[in-house]
Image 1 (cartoon, rainbow, N blue to C red):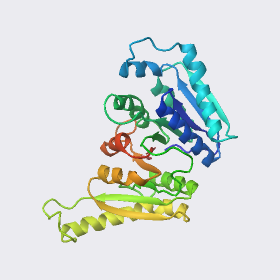
Image 2: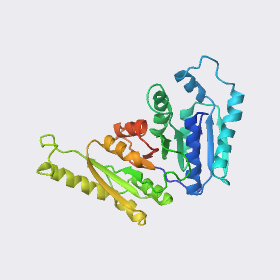
Image 3: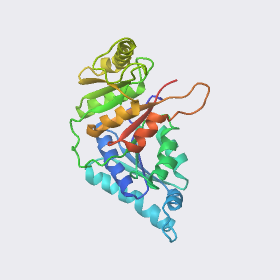
Image 4: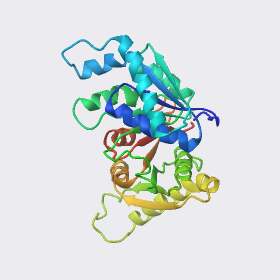
Length: 297
């Protein structure tokens, strides 16, 4: 992940939908927590994507109306939510994916809205949010879930992070600790593990290979937390080692979370980041906002 500077704004992509307005609320709160400006971006060809997935039986609104109203309305909403917050707007006459990818390169974090669950709505999530989250060099936060969006509603709830395999300086874990520190919230560090198939899954304890697998999961969790916990010693850490599939464990943990953080890696020999099955699942089904953080190669 590229190093972010202290003065980079939080950027939010808008399209006039209720989902993007909820993203504006989140982004305004995030900018205030970081002490940075908010930058509102509207890709003026976004309605081409929207019209293809949600045909309305009529011509799209005029370009002048869309560009003249959407970005201004979003900025007004952000200023009302966080009085005194510096807010700027930008309208770009391109499709959303390249615009948002460029915006993420200059942002402390890029915030997007999710249109909801199931059916055609998820097609738009796939065409925009997944494409952006999988191809940026900075954090992308997708605001989803059915939680109340009032300021402070999730105060004190944990920032959940899936602790990956690999080195002790995971960018996703460090991001989670910084977000928790800003919110004065605990980090809930989650590591999933699988009992060997030949051992009984309903056995109350650990025997044989399952004990070794559980121990390795515990060691990987401690390794993954080492650097971030050292950088943020005042953040409370709740360790969870749970038997099951990672995507199921993280989705369960999202039910009472303020934010769920997952990493995206660059596969060996390939360009761009990789949205794996776990990230794909949580972006579609998590009960709270999801931050996708690129991991260094």
